Image 1 (cartoon, one colour):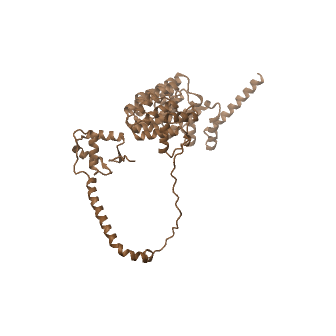
Image 2 (cartoon, rainbow, N blue to C red):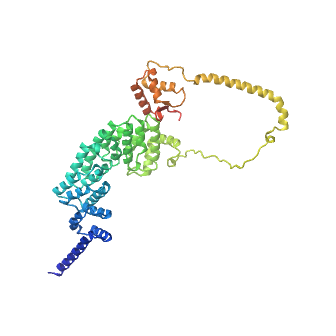
Image 3 (cartoon, helix red, strand yellow):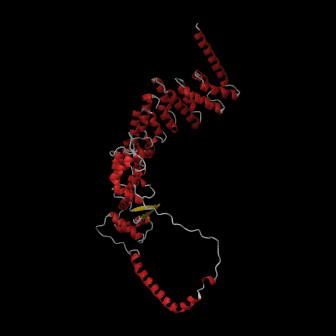
Length: 486
């Protein structure tokens, strides 16, 4: 035997003695010794050789030692020990069980999952029996179990979309890129019909290559759902003026367009594509969309788009939108526009001199007229009093004449050729007494018949006017006209 072989044998024997000492200490009545042995075992290179010992003492009375044992078993279980481990997991509470499953996911992330088809099958069958509350962690483990694990997750997404948890959606990215994209596409398609509340979490994992998967939500959702998709597109950045981006640009609801403009990520967008959609928004029929488009143009003077020089970008937008930029600078003084070389007139806060806040007394002598005023006041008093009386009569007569114009109409006047929205607005004005005040939805439904409106006509007209920004809900169950002068 050579010296190297002797040295290797000596090292191996030393390691075996160390393992034997750890094994004997794991079930020591002295908890301090047992804790130390369990901690040393976690770091040992040959730790898996003591898996049988750990499996025999899984359910010890001490909580700390039991957690360490289960965690070790989760990280090193293989073969026939896998069913035994999951059978033992049923005896502990869900929080401890979740910690064990997370240790399995952590171990697979570091060393990789099993390569054997038989071993992968054992893990999938065992994980299939785990409760729904652990679905997110189970999805993460399945990502390391090859095609069998991917098939299991795919079936859950395709056939049981309703039970896919929110935390499970980000775990899809743990799979290979091609597999993850296929799963995301299926999930978005199914969730749009079966579980639309998953949209927020799907939006959090899509990128430039998968943003198109959100298209099903545009056709099946209300304006709030479409606005959520618009925000996701804006956060990712505009790299193409086609596809799902143009569906948002052509959306009939102004709130969806505004959501996109408010969340646009300029630094990750391409200037050419961004300018195309801004040009569409700048000519939109709704004033709020146009205003937000102008603000976006001003912000393009401060943040460069992807692979763009800021100075060249400024020159380009100035050539194309110069007049609109000048108008936007005046309307948006909160955004710095000095880069255009034009100074926007500011309105500074006027100077107000400091005054003495101390209280001072006052007497009748302070407000008494002077001798000259008293002498001249006697001769002018009669004329002044006469003028005041005439002014009072004039004001009273004017108020009477004007009040007749401002009073609410005595009856609801309608024309035969009026549309449903015009009838709705006439009814709203009638119920509000011609004033800018709330009208409850209940009152509108009660009086709908007088305006020749059915319940369906009333709801459709209200929805259309809300989209156009003509009316809004000021509080629950109350409708108010938008002040067009604002």
